[in-house]
Image 1 (spheres, rainbow over the protein chains, first blue to last red):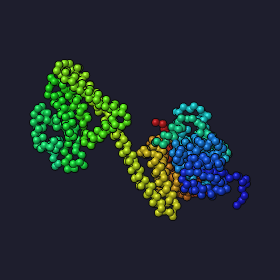
Image 2: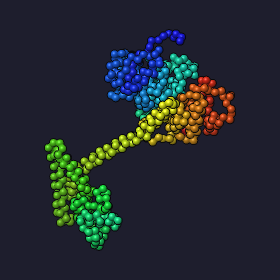
Image 3: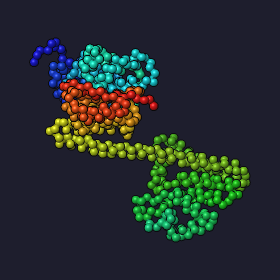
Image 4: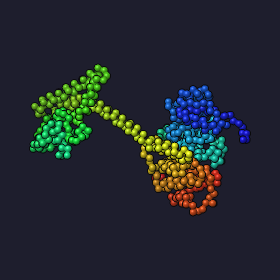
Length: 223
Length: 391
């Protein structure tokens, strides 16, 4: 083993999921990433989660979307005003647009499905801890669909309601399964710039009051 | 066979009145002499009276009359119809005819299909309406019923007075309306409860049906798959394939309860990615942006995509393939990408059917293009594009 160039502090992670089996599964998977992640606590209910996050002040909370008593959104809504520095990464078995868009708009900085591999999960945690966003291909597809497929929709705030050409390109490559590094070399930009674009898309996704966005997500569920 | 000759009306009536069916039939025949009255009566009974419940009388499917109340209503109706048929001059003075018809209809409405159990339920309900809650509501019910009866009585006496004078038909409308309002007041709460009761019953039935459907579905799909997975514990790839296929199926069932619209582009794309996942035990990460009705050209893209996915699954040596498809107003783009072994196009023989015919040829025949980029060791990406003509 060669010594790392610049040893980085471990990311302190808190697990929230109402299935204890799944929590121990995530623990086991992340155990292979001991040089990245340190699990500082876990919780199985919304109330436990709020209390546990308050006490352990983690860097990143891995948050299950579906739980009794309001789910991940309830945790986000209660913790974020009090502990704005805690970042959230949503984990779910659901690919329903409504759920995905819901937790992102409630403040999560990313969304991955529970079938993600341990190494990918550790990388996503690190990325979120660094303040960047984590978009799965599916989430990128959702955003493209919601933002670009309705050209007739009136736009109230072009700054928030439209994607730039570059952001669209980045999202398309994400949806095609490209990693950030691959996107960077494809578009001849730096990885940092890719991260900036993705974060900017995340901000638009969270702040845009496009009526279309929530309606689109709901429609996707019904179709 | 079960005692019926035509529709079983006479048989049922005889059974109910404890008479010989022959007597009843003769009665009908005799009544027929009077302007076909008997035939009309028979038809009316046939239309209105329900069949005897099979459970109650399994052998005889005779028709069955509830009791005097319903019989009276029917008789009134039939007399009205008979008058309509026979007495033209009476029709002109509809003082007699119309109230008769209306009164008969009102009673028939009350008693129609009210067999013993139903009626006892109605009675229970009406007593519940009166009984449940405060004295006030009890009093209100009493007032309503009393008022209704009073109105009926007023209507009848008005009718009698007017019938004596045989005055203008318009005058008869007033008692008729009064009668109608009275009947409505009397039967209103019953109808209300009945409708509420029926919709509650229907909701309950739908709920239990849904539960049964859910159980059946889970049994056929999830439980079977779990059993299969237990038998394949030593083959991770097979387990992954089973789990993935079941996941996809369950997801489709949960989130797309409507019949899948296979005629749409997005659904067709998800369809082929599912097929390839099942057939080759790979995971196809599928993202489709936009949607459109399938036509020949879009269908060709779907087939070319399928071929590209199959190639990736078979030759790339990976367990995961990415599929991205986007429909824009005038362009369709599809990317199929793997991070597998890749290949050097120069080394692939020209007659390799998959790439040459199924992908490139198919796309070109439909006015599209296919580009294949591959780097040995780094993977392959197939790009399909086609312009769309706006409808």
